[in-house]
Length: 399
Image (cartoon, rainbow, N blue to C red; front, top):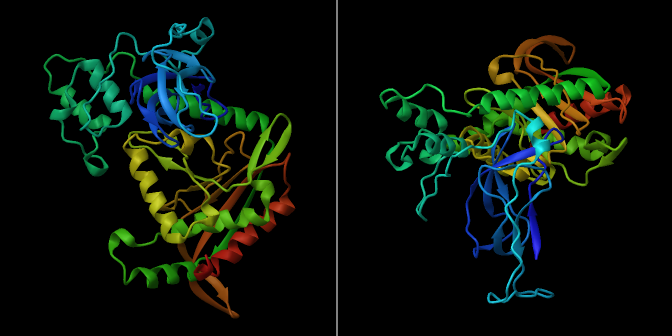
């Protein structure tokens, strides 16, 4: 029998609120299955399980706010070597549901959902973001009667809010629903901690992006729109390959020591509709083809904007990449998200006078930046790291 714990979804997370169980006791589960929805200061997150077996018992009721590491459920192993099936008729010592502790009362940004029953769907369940389900449960709104505006027709918070406004005399704001405020508070707390504890240093480097621009344009001419590459995918891949050579930018600083990661999970900063920001990971980005990486980025953006990102994507980025080029920003200097030790930024590709083969010619250029932790690396290594990204971008066909 193993315990399914409240996961840690970042260094700034102390507790989470269980919003919804997606499976019932007695259901077989396997690694990667999404079995619960937990709300944190970052928003509502789908929680995956990383063991295989039968969901035996639920230990925490929906609406309870509990610390990271609290057992949420018991999973019974079945089959395989060493598995000991538990007879269903054997008497068990019941473990009472875990209630919010006094310690959690000190965390006002994360509140239990008082007197709110979770919205549960039949096997043919409606696709809706967790926060949309929570809003609907507060007002007793039937999701099956709402047309979703999200990817694949997913129902978003805005769709439920629109339906709620059609109810005469309904209050404008649901009680206890302050997800955006909680997310901004979490971002502020993490960034304040970062600037307070991490000795940042900053570097910038402007490079000729003509090779990338021309190669992507030529490749996309024979592709359908949904199969085309974006330049951002090449930025992610070049960053992921560069940290293979400069591993001091890929990992975590914890307990006064740097722990290098054996994997390159690039967190991609994505703006959430209505406000807020998350940076879920593209796992093993250094090993993915550009097409696979692009597909992963599209999937992430679609799910994040529908409010359906997963615990594994939030918990384990080893380095973050931020790009505001599509917003017209030419240079972005990021703040490191602890316990990571580096963040790379890319600005807008713009046309500038450039010296090429001894002549001044117009060329597309891009400015990339690095914010890094001086406890782990220095400006010399940071400069070499940016130069390596530059070198890789000059040979896009090798990415």
